[in-house]
Amino acid sequence: VQLVEFGGGLVQAGGSLRLSCAASGLTFSDYSMGWFRRGPGKEREFVARITWNGRVTNYGDSMEGRFTISRDNAKNTVYLQMNSLKPEDTAVYYCASASRPYTILSGQFDVGSWGQGTQVTVSS
Image (cartoon, rainbow, N blue to C red; front, side):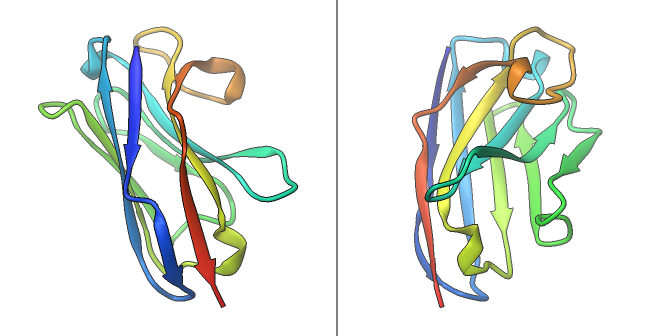
């Protein structure tokens, strides 16, 4: 399985970014996907997840209402739209796939594969 993230960069507070994650080596439409992040000096934390069919999405507490996860199973790609960005959103963002098909990606222990990460920096 290979997960490759795109779209990170530098943005001012209040701005927006969209991250993409292209997946290969798995039947993408069978797997829940998620995004996690690790800020400077912090533990990696959950950002968002989406079920294999796109019907259910969940977000970390501080992302609810600002971030939107979506997927295009025809393109084997999962997205993370980030709006109203804050300096505390600065982190390396990681794409993740579930370890088994048709299961919820409940946490890091459910992750089967990780992307290499993409840096998001929000300036104040």
